[in-house]
Structure formats: structure tokens, C-alpha cells
Image (cartoon, rainbow, N blue to C red; front, top):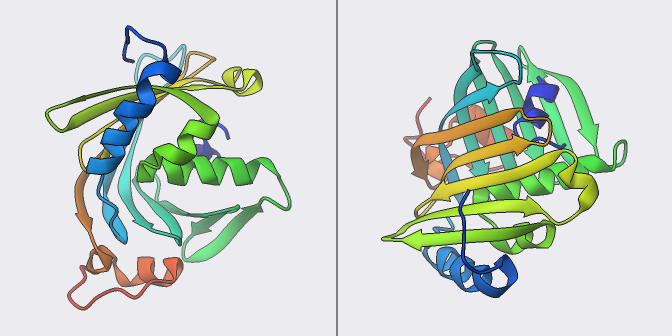
Length: 215
């Protein structure tokens, strides 16, 4: 499960007339202006992992919850149930209600990078993403697309590019690996505010679920 979760962000395409550093800051600044910054956002995800050599994608579905400053709960429902709790510098894998594995930046320094990038991508934190990637972005009628290319040559050996799409929230993340593998993520049914959290998600994220939250 941890490996599947890490492959989601692959660590660990828009053609623009001007190079990123001349154009994208203005575009991403406008995107950031329209992006919502909710305390919490929860919804469903559908993931398709397209592996070189396989004709059919490896598909999975589930639910996610992101709470600002607290982290992300990523719950896979199909084909195999499991849960990841991602917070800055730590990824915890849960199976059958118990901690199955814990990876921390202290044990593996790359985990700090992985968690920061995952939280930034799902949350649409362009200021943080800009430190690691060059960004080509377009914005039209409230809908935006952004293609991220790693600045670091070592990272480009793993990640070719990452495409984000959205409106007031991030709606899709597509990761193209240098190997040719590709991961496509789509987020649907997103609701915002702490009332969107289920009680078990609220406990993991250290947040207080509002009354009326779905069970």
C-alpha cells in the first residue's frame, strides 16, 4: 500500500509560446487568487496507473480528506482496502485499523520531499510547487491547467512531468514518469469544511468533525 501511495506522486501538457519563468508567475498568481483555501476538503478519487507493457490500466478508487496544516488521509476502497495518513515528514500505512508501517523523514530523508510535494499538489500550493518545478499554466473562463517539470536533473530521471487541472480546487493530477509509466488521478464529489470529515478521518487528522458529518 505504501508503494502504491508513493507511486501516486511518483517519487517518491500545455505548449506555451513563452518560457515558464517569463510567463507562468503571472498566470499562476491569477490561479492562486481564484483557488479556494478551505480548512478541509474531502471527496472521492479514481486512480488509473498505466504501466508500460500492460494493455489495461491498474485502477483503484477511494476517498481522500485534506485538512490544512494537518495532512491528508487517502483511503483506498477498491480493489484492495487500505489507508495512508500523510503529514509533513511522515507517511503512515493503516491496515485493518492498525498501523502497518510508518515512514518518517528521520528514517528516510526523501519522505520529507514526498509528503511536501503530495500535500502541495492536492492542495494547489503553487508557491511551494514553484520551488521544485517549472510551471507552464493557462487559465480560461475559470478553468486552469498547469504542467510541472522538475527543475532538478536527478528528479527528472524519475518524473517527466506532472499535469494539474482545476477551477477553485484541484480536480485532476496526471503524473508522467521518466520510465513511460503514467498515473492519472481524478477528484470528484469534493466538499469543503470540517463538516466534510467523517469521525475516523477527523481523529487521524487531529480535527474536530462538525455535527452532521457523514459516517
